[in-house]
Image 1 (tube, rainbow, N blue to C red):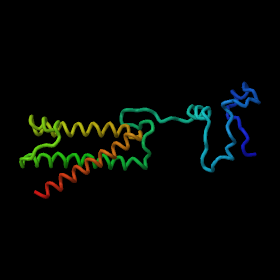
Image 2: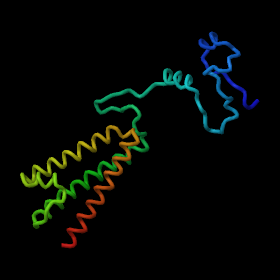
Image 3: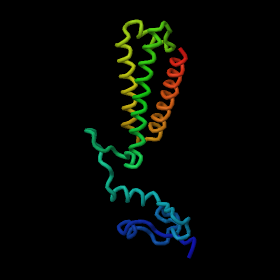
Image 4: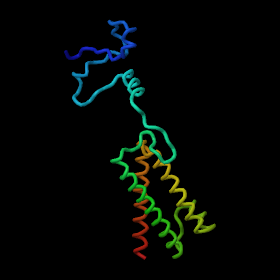
Length: 170
């Protein structure tokens, strides 16, 4: 009978519940009338399931983190990290080459670091990009971090392409 209400409370709560209560938070529409393949759980059901189902353990020693990207998506994130490291290396090398030819650095923060010491500036740049990508990698289960890793890789890829096209035109 479509449209019938079903009590979703567990047996302990149902025994205390008034059987005819129409405002009960445990009453939900019958699932058979819902869209096929899509189950909508009530709030008490979700709370009960989180207590029953095992949650991924938090671990910080290189083990799995809660909500980690599935095994199918992990290689894509690893590829993004590898590309980001490659693009950062290309940026460092091409910047050093352009500086040796007499060009100036466009980034004012890097320009002030480059005035002090070139290897130190490249080390600090690599360290900052590495730490930023590590933070994004550790939080890759969050949509913002996953999009940030993708955007950072694309931006560094465009920067590396610009450097390579500029260096090839010399």
